[in-house]
Image 1 (cartoon, rainbow, N blue to C red):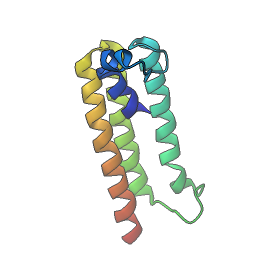
Image 2: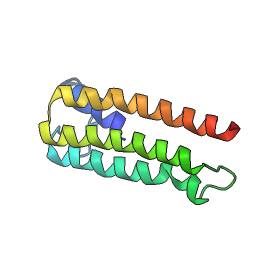
Image 3: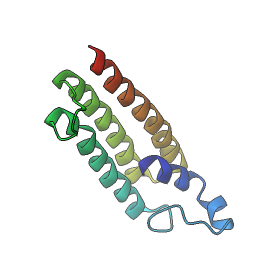
Image 4: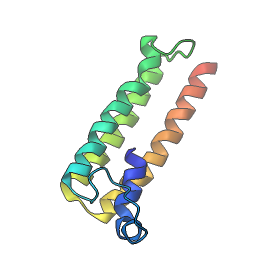
Length: 115
């Protein structure tokens, strides 16, 4: 959700003209930014389930879990920046870092599987 809501924030006027509501509160405001932060926190928790043995056969080493946790903190930081600034620029940075986050986390999972 942080990724899609960041896009919704950046393109809010275009979505409104099309009659599509992409943001949880219907507008780019502090409540939407807060929900981005809360969903980022949930994403961080869920991404660490494999190190706790809560994901069946999928396992994650402690070292990989630390790397995933660091990436989660980076994503969280950009969510907090959006909450503080509430600007298009902050939303764009969050959207970009969310792409980096998911890519790096997936690579960590794959590499950890073979190490």
